[in-house]
Length: 334
Image 1 (cartoon, one colour):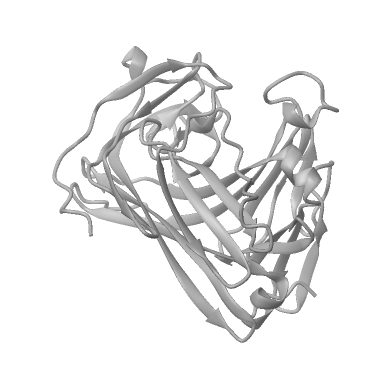
Image 2: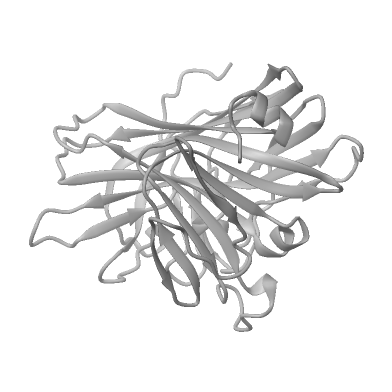
């Protein structure tokens, strides 16, 4: 178990190249009956997840990392949030997970972690400095002593094996906590937990995404190429970008060495943003390594009367198994 969090960790890494992929320095894993999964965080770039590996247990040495770890300060597997300022203010303020990549290169805060087995606990808090203004495009970085800071944050990952009638699956819970520095009140406060995915791995694994609400299933959506989603607002510009209605859950499916392995993400009651970018890292839209795919699950929290010192947490489950195993838990795709 982690000790009580007491201090503020302000050690800062600055001016890392934009395309740099931080190494996974904090790693935990779980072996289920048919699938293994390993999670890895960067301890120097805000605790952002840079590894989410899927393993078909028939090939136990073949680890497939589906997470896009390049420019992880604004990608990877992370929790970010947007504050809507009051009329006449600066508009929507975007905060990444104690990191950023809107200025030249990447920056991020270092933290200490207790980790063993299937649990990662941050031991300190990190300042949450804004990355940019959404409408104006203004970029910030504490490396230049710029940006807004209203909260501190910390990351915790917990894994467990869940038994089903078809064997055990892996469940990761990604929880991020926000501690208010000052009394706050805003028109709107929205967190998003995002999975940025490697486009070339998605192509090799025939990534398919299914979105379900009640008896309605949208999918398979194959986001390696441009796409649309029924009931969503979509634009096609340097790829595809869709903002959706609420769903009960999503299932993301890769073929891992002959077996379809899915990640079920439940409770999408505030909607999803699903994007495919074509030229994030280089200019050839036909080169899969130039882009990425990103899945954002939104969560609105109360925005009025946030008291200084109060702690609020956004937690989301990711259930990993074969499709029959996920179906046994109620995550069906048909």
